[in-house]
Every structure is written in C-alpha cells, then in structure tokens.
Length: 129
Image 1 (spheres, rainbow, N blue to C red):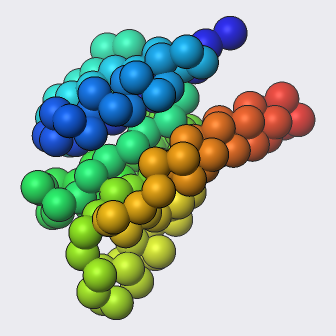
Image 2 (cartoon, rainbow, N blue to C red):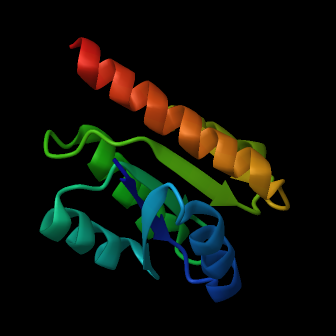
C-alpha cells in the first residue's frame, strides 16, 4: 500500500525531483506554503509524512510544525529542509521534536532513506500500540 508524503516547498525543481523519486512507492502531494499544507492535511486526512522547507516562510513553518506536533488530529513524522546554518535555528528545530533535519545542500538519496525509515518506523509504532 502506498503512503502519502506531503511536500511543503515553493521550489518547483525540487518538487519535481521529489515527485519523480518518490512516486513509485508513495503518493506525493505538493503545496507551496504551510497554510495550504494544513488545509490539505485536514481535507485528506491520510498524510503519512510531511517534508517542509523553512527557507521561504520560517515563522509560518515553525508554527505549522508546533501545531502538527501538539495536535491530537495528526501523528505524522516531519522532516525539515533548511539552508540556515545558524546554531540558534538548529536548536529551535531540535526542540520541535522533528524526525529529521537536512541542511542544504544535501544528498537527495539520504532524504529518500530518511523518508522510508520514518514511514516504516511510524507504521511499526502504530502497529504495536
């Protein structure tokens, strides 16, 4: 059964690559901002993992992640992409209890491995609870 990955990223070339690489094993839904991403999650209800790029909308991305992590409606792994190398930002992201953080530039294959690991681990946790 295919899982659904939600990509919140305004970078069209990145989204094309993500769609191409993941579409064999996953449904990939792409939106350009966190508000649309939240609407998509509420409407579909079947998002299994979120990838969010914090570069274009840092404050909104942090609010989105905090909402997802504190909400009883959603239990999904969150992976963050950022080009910000600030230790303060990395600390704030770490405190958000993310599943993974990728600082740009990064190896896309490592992102795919992280997606698959987090989806598999998440399914194991759900199956054992």
